[in-house]
Structures are given as C-alpha cells and as structure tokens.
Image (cartoon, rainbow, N blue to C red; front, side, top):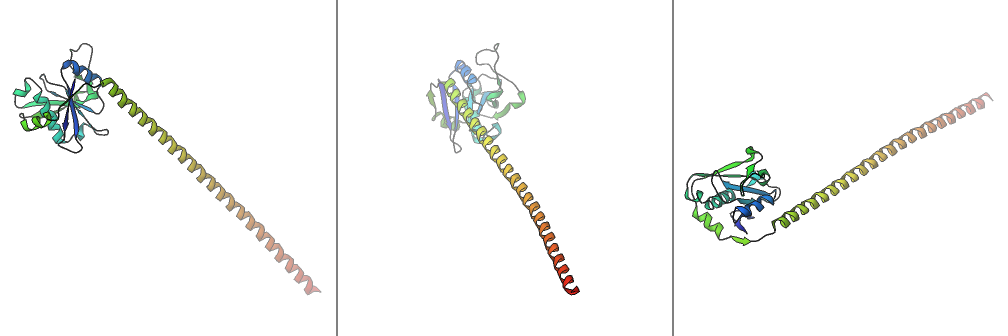
Length: 221
C-alpha cells in the first residue's frame, strides 16, 4: 500500500507519497523515478516520503511552501521526530539513493553526500499536517509497471527528438547544398558573361577596324 497526498499550496499542485512500512519502502526505492525527491528525518527513524517533480524541474526548483509540506509530513510520520522540536529533515534526488545487499530492510545510503540537502523543522504545524491528511489516498499501485510506462514514454520522446534532429540536419545539409549550387551557378554565369563581353568587344573592335579600312580605301580613290 502507498499513501498519496496532494500539496495544493501552489498551482499546479504537487504529489507526495510514502510507503506504509519499511518493506514497501524497499519497492519505492527500487521503482522510484528520476523526478522523485526523497525525504527522511535526519538521524531518526521515519517514513520515506517522496515528492514527484514535474519533468524538467530539479531539487532546486521546489517551491518553499511545498518543501515545508514535505518536511512537516516526514516529521509527523516519525515516532520520535513527531514529539521533538528543532529537528532536521534531509532530502535528495531519488537517483542519489544507494542500496547495497548488506543493508537492512528500509535502510538507505547516498552515492554523493554533497547532493543531500537539509531543511530545519522547528516544530509541528498542525494546520499543514491536517491539510495534507485530508488529501490522503490509499492505493495499491503496480510500481514496476508504472516505472516501465514512464521509461517507455521517455524512450519514445528521445526517439522522436532524435528523428526530428536528424530531419533538421538533413534539411540544413540540403539547404547548404542548394546554396553552394546557386553560388557555383552564379559564378559560372558571371564567367560566361565576361567571356561574352570579351567576344562582343572583340567583334566591335573588328567592325571598327573594317570601317576605318573602308574609309581609308575610299579616300585613296
């Protein structure tokens, strides 16, 4: 079972989700999306909460209001953290999560510590938690199928982009070829015109010479 929440503090709203227990957290880790941001109470046990970003957004694009929603939800779903003030919540892209065979169920590490961010939570804000709880929905998704569908769509998009790029490159090559042919044709025509002018000049000079000769002969007579 996966719990889904809606953060409607911005428009369009964001989807937040988390597993029911540590065993379901394993599936969430395995079938997460590149658009997912993982949240957890720092150094304490808590739910694994995920924020799904729209395509094209990064961890730095999370609206502050949505970040607060995620942090409050994580705190509220920590047995120890929900009773404490001034805790830290860590968050990082799903792709930065590291899972090895020697780790316990639900345990996670990071590939790159520098990609882990921290947000401080002073205290629980009931107004935020209650608002999120009202949007809570329980579902039994096929996480593997959803991930495959998402990846297939991405592959198709990349394939279409590649085909479009090849088409543009082909059109550009055609345009350059036509421009080169036009340039060569223009040069050829210019050369032909020069030769024609030379011939015309020579013909005119010959005609003038003949006229002079005729005039000379006429005068001598």
